[in-house]
Amino acid sequence: VESKIKELQESYDHQVAEKKKLEISIMQTQSRLKRASKLTTALADEQIRWKENVTEFNEQMKTVTGNVFVSSACVAYYGAFPSSYRLELVENWVEGCKEHKIPVSDNPSIINVLADAFSIRQWVTQGLPRDDFSTENAILVTKGRRWPLIIDPQEQANRWIKNKEKENALKIIKMTDGHFLRILENCVRIGMPLLLEDVGETLDPALEPILLKQTFMSGGRLLIRLGDSDIEYDSNFKFYMTTKLSNPHYLPEICIKVTIINFSVTKQGLEDQILRYCNIFEGSDISFQFFS
Image 1 (cartoon, rainbow, N blue to C red):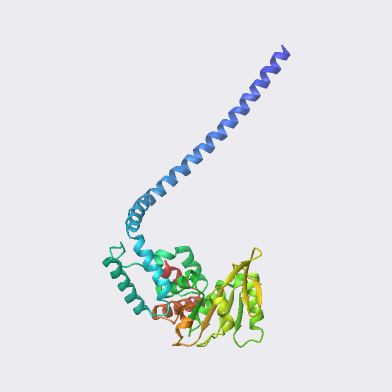
Image 2: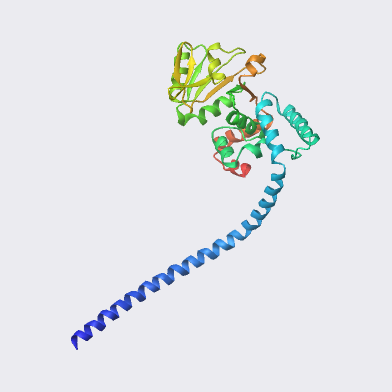
């Protein structure tokens, strides 16, 4: 009898434990159902937006060829011009696309084609003015195949590049520095970003292999010839050039080797900077309302 009682007691304890597990499982399931219900409700509005986005993306797919063509032309050619000339160039390219039956949007923008919201927000936190002209310039700096030579009389690009590449141990030099070539070689070898400031209307011939990216393979290594020596070329190397000249005249042989970008301040960019400084001094949250 005692053996039977013990067996029944163990069975009872086991069933009680199972009951507790089931109760916990029921509570967890109910909690998940509540969260799922809230999520479904919250996503109901998102579903509408997603459907609208799908429709918009389908329309964009029809004109992607022309838009990418115009954006590529922008990166290659229009960096040296002010905003009004850039708009005129884009209008001419769009007209040419339509004449040749290439599908294209009426107002294509390199911001929509070559940038994303995250990158733009990151650039803004690094000190880039939020106006479209400055955003276009940032795209030209980051997407151009040739190294950028930036017309920067107000030093906006200078400050932005310094903040942008700060974490990558940016090196800053001038043509007049005594160790210019040695610093250049070190940056190329170990893949550090390099900013050449106060560029004039001519460039040192020693920079030509860098500007033309005259790299070659030897013994399984990527090399570049600087002066009389071949050094390893790290693919992480970045090269920026800025000039304080407001209206420099560069010869064609320089223009074909670099991406010239006009970073001269615009009215909208100046308004943005003034607002930022006001927020810093007053400690208000106006900027969050302004940028929302």
